Image (tube, rainbow, N blue to C red):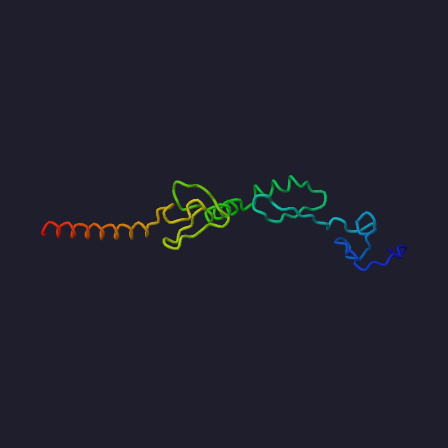
Length: 152
């Protein structure tokens, strides 16, 4: 303003008239702005986290309701939440725990919670297959030894 002689190194630019003002005269009312209707406020939708513009004099709740009923990407937000949950879910069907940092088994490449991180705890498929082949080999060896002792 002409009557204000305050030096401001970081002036505010009015969104209504485009002029620059000091901290004391930055609002529409303080500098008698000629175009205050251009002012726009914003809020974020709590469901889809999208920015919603609100014009001066418009009720925030009404505007949010319009957004949710008309263009809210609620399904996209729900899908993102579902994907985030699946990322940390333990692969053991009987366990429903979620971990921020899931542990991936080196044998079966599935993710597990801290409780089921060890191969015996989640009955790792590859471990069971290798154990089955080892036990069948042991059984064959025992059978061969038994046959040899009978032949003697």
